Each structure stands twice: as C-alpha cells, then as structure tokens.
Image (cartoon, rainbow, N blue to C red):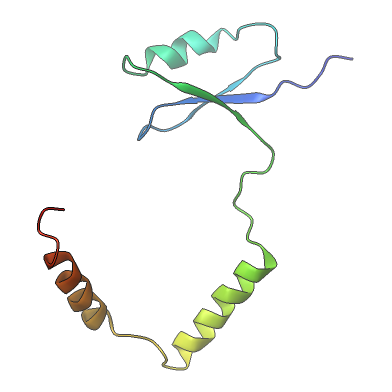
Length: 96
C-alpha cells in the first residue's frame, strides 16, 4: 500500500503559502507553477502537519472566558486611555 502523500507548503515571508501534495518520491508537476509565482529569492520548505495549531488549550480557553467576563463586568480600560498610554511610550523612543 502506498504511503499517504504529505502536504508540503512553499512560502515566502509575507506571501501566502503555496500548498503542494508530495508523495516523497516524485516531484509534483505543480511545483514549477508554484515556484514561477514566487519572486526570486531563498525559500524554506516546511511540512504541514495535521495539527494546524489553531486549537486552544483548555487553559487558554479559560483565560479568554475570564477576560470576557471581566470586560462584561466593566473591568476594562477605555480605548482612549490605552491609546494615549501607548502613544506616550512610543514617543519616548523617537528612533524606532
């Protein structure tokens, strides 16, 4: 029985990922097309696993739920205050 073809994605930083199915032996015909769409440069091939990392841990979910309850209870900082504090901090580093 042939092994399942792993998905391989080809991407440049800032560009959308190109996903190519590869059986581990034969070079897919669509890889040339995917490469042709990318600008010249260096690229990293990275295997795409079944775990896409989008799942939250139970602790993360609990933290988000607690934050929502806190905001619903009025324990939050107004955006104008946050914006002013960030602007003041950024102003302290004019070269950045």
